[in-house]
Length: 567
Image (tube, rainbow, N blue to C red; front, side, top):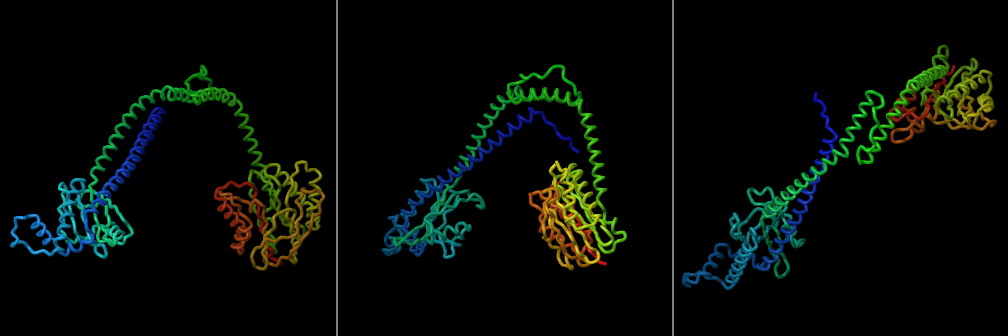
């Protein structure tokens, strides 16, 4: 395994500046390269276009077909005889008046195009007539520069169109949708030289397009000029970087690297010894404000750390003691809560299971279930208006009061009213608790309940779906001292179920801030309504954990599932 390489601050700083300067230089060269290329290419296109416009005036578009009809051989022979006056009339070919005119036009146009080719440094000028599908064209004129390696094509030569780009250009020009096209070719030339070609329409006197004029020019100058530009900018940038790096490296060492090295050595010494140095750090270590401030801060930190070390042991002991006490309180609190097995050993007419998970070490939620007499079981779920140690004490008092009063009998509202009265007498903290208390008559499934500010339960009747059952609502216990609490009721058939929960469930949050919500509670309950109470609570817990996806729990979470089985 390779050992991780470490670099000094000086090396990193100078290296970073150097890399930044080099990257900036490459960026400037790249921008200049593309800008220069675009500008020069535009100028090339314009120059070729201007030559093409002039070349248009040297041609007779209406005569192109007649040139081809006369043919290359007869045309060349006629031009030779017209220009050689030593040929006797008796030996000369006979030419009609029209042929004489077309030969003269052709000779004039060809000579003019040749001269234009050589004087304007154009590689080739040619006039063509494309086929109907533009995949081929017939050459009418093909004038090649004397310095070009290309051999001129004879008039009438049929050539395959080289690329799809040319086909599209031919089509736009011949159909009148474009008055000029440009094709730049730098690759796939089969040994040819990179070039730019301007294509212009050859229009007859009636305005129709008779053919296409093509003016081609090599772009070697562009390549040469572009290479010179890159080399020049690169050389100047290299010289500038060298001068700049020599100038800035000394300044960085004096004002940054050496002072920070001194601070680092002092910090290492203090970390090893935890003692004050022989002399304080000099605030005039350099002219950089931030480093001077850091020097003063490190000196102060050493003094404060030495002072604080003396208190660390006591603080640690106190923290350990508090942690142990909270752990003991959590065990006591969980020990106060009943477990399903406590009632199920000899009970076959109902099944119950509950779960509580505090947001802190101890919480303010609680649940309870107990037999009031041989025929009535009480189920309770509650949520104190706070979390932590204070809420845990309030929870213990509320739970004891409710259970103690319920053992004496009475309706759910009477039990809650008594609890409210007892708590309100000495409630200087201003806390309150929401409670849902239900008393189930195991003989007939009748449920007498009181909802004191708590979330509505989910009830499942006759093997149907769980539904949130809204009923009469009373204020929370100790919220409005002396208020009236209202009873409500419903009937359970064998197999019917009750699911109670605190708002830590429906208000659980995901990483995105979304709440778990009542709809999800109903959905997950109904997907698992056939499982046992213990399994149902486990499924809901897992679904909430998956929904939260690591988001910390911010409130106590409690659930209770009850199934009435009947006698």
